[in-house]
Length: 182
Image (cartoon, rainbow, N blue to C red; front, side):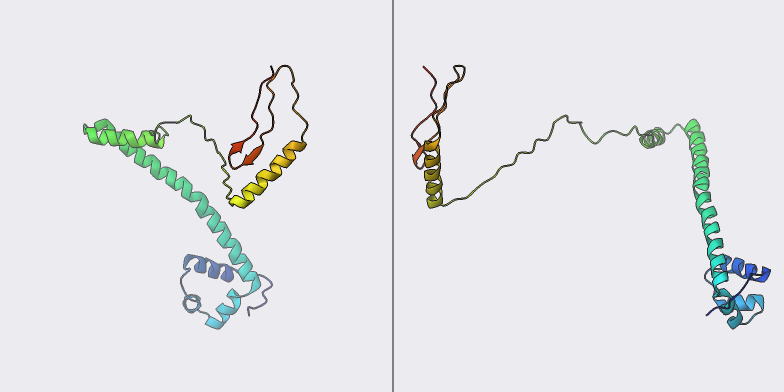
């Protein structure tokens, strides 16, 4: 368990700096570097106040490093582009010029598409397949015939074709069919 420190001293800040600069080192090496015992360094380092301040310092450093990386990458990219531009202006090698132009255009979004663009629309069709035994099919057809016989006769509306209900007497035999008014 760490010591209950009320405030941090300059020595504590120096220990923090050393720990941040040497993250892989042990407390024994740290104690030797500062001339203290390992027990004293351990007590200080494990105190709540020290740990809190160390976490803040790590966060500050991480923020600076993460902010610096994109800046450095842009600088390297700018240097590379300058060298490529100089080389393109002095070279006569057609393969190099073609590869450079192709890569640059590709990065700028002028790469060829992956094939012809199709204007075809997708139509989803659901097909339901029902399997029934001969007996259940005959029973269903019989029931349909009974229901259709209870329906009122079809009416003629505006000289439209009169469609009578289909009545089945056995498998696949239709008794009545559509008619047109006379």
